[in-house]
Image (cartoon, rainbow, N blue to C red; front, side):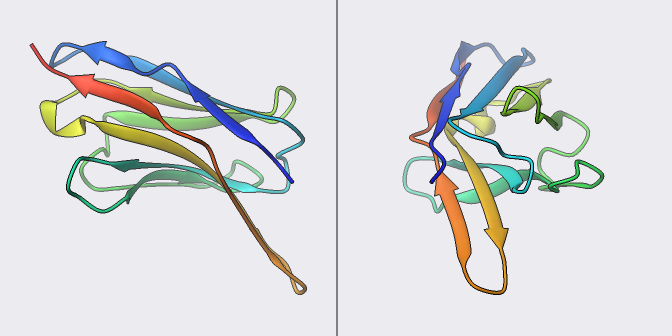
Length: 119
């Protein structure tokens, strides 16, 4: 069982930047990690993912070129660097850890951190 705790959210003006962190209670090196977000009245959507080896990343079209996901397995932490923020980026951002093996699927979620982009 891995517990995930997000931090770094807050209120920022359009065009600003934030860096979200996701700290895990245990080792994450075997897990694919990701960031998802959910705006009021909308479904949760993928923002970015990174493979267990960190060799591949994937981004939603809406954040490509503005957001960067990274991981530091030595610190059991995943980051989301967000630049050129827009009001439509306002949402609750969740961290996810995922691994599927022959025997089971592991899918962990944090409680979320709020990002509000507004002038």
